[in-house]
Image (spheres, rainbow, N blue to C red):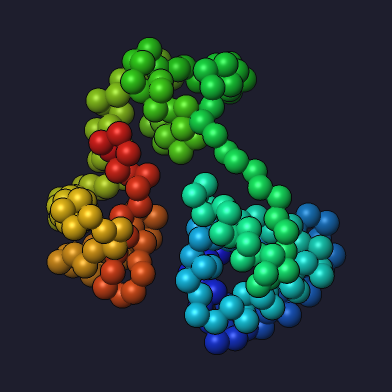
Length: 221
């Protein structure tokens, strides 16, 4: 699994430190099911040099790899055009929507977890991301509501027993809101920023420009 930003490379072999890309391909040559995931594929649109990515995708295609790109819906049309014109790929588009109530009930029965009676939390976990988070904190017999779920999510995902980490996150959220921009330049310790980036809460455009992932901004979370 790769992030699309990792493809800003001089050479395809820069992906690996101790061996080259062909070594990687050869090591998996006999595997029956081979899948590569490229996350946040919309970042491929920003690549200054597409040669490494084109070579990467071409070689994988020749060796029967399945390639999955993830992106937000509003980038689908322009990505489809770029894939066809630049990478000579015509991808199949699969839209992941929120679960409906019956699907959520079926999952609850199949995997033996209790659904919340709190309507606000129930609606929230129809989103697969928040369902995943709910199941991380779910304990059999415990009744979670929206407020205590939000508190658990904040404590375990944002604060992590580190108040400066929480302060940095809030600072970035307010800065972004006031600036009206996706990317901001926060005044936070680099070690804290690196932790939040590693946890997938922040992303970077440059070493200074920070993107706060909107997933953690939705519904006041």
